[in-house]
Length: 189
Image (cartoon, rainbow, N blue to C red; front, side):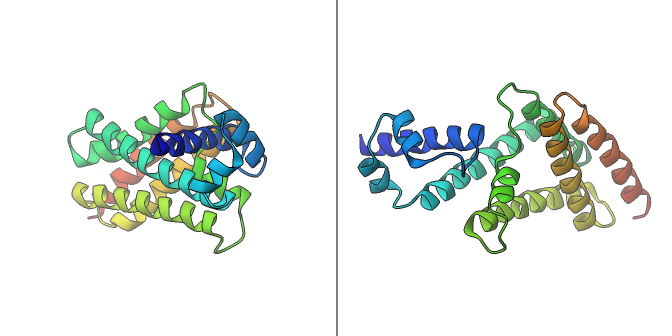
């Protein structure tokens, strides 16, 4: 039962953090929404900061799995997989509950350099860039790290644009730009 309660508290907190913002969501609101007590919350998460970091860790694992599964279901060839990432994100952005990237949102709320939340967000994007780099290497491009960084910027920018202006087509435009970058990298190898 205790593991279920811990998971329930984390799930409830994650939903509130994502929909309302981390700083705007107090422990009292989490406890009330989870139908538990502060004592139970603090038993599993000694501070709100620990709960926030657990929320980001949970999202990290879920996002990376969703991205990798989405790529595999959409493409077989490395070049196609690089572009399929944009399709995976477009599907995420097209859901009614979309409120932006949890890592970009958290980094914006905790902007101080070397803050643990900022570090967790940066770590996720580092892993994401490495995934892109690995795909770019398999695709045989001339500068895989550069292409990965460019694609990561395109995706992050499209996410923020879509957060500001829903149904803007930002991810489709980002994908079109990535196709140009990919063709260029393949032409100069």
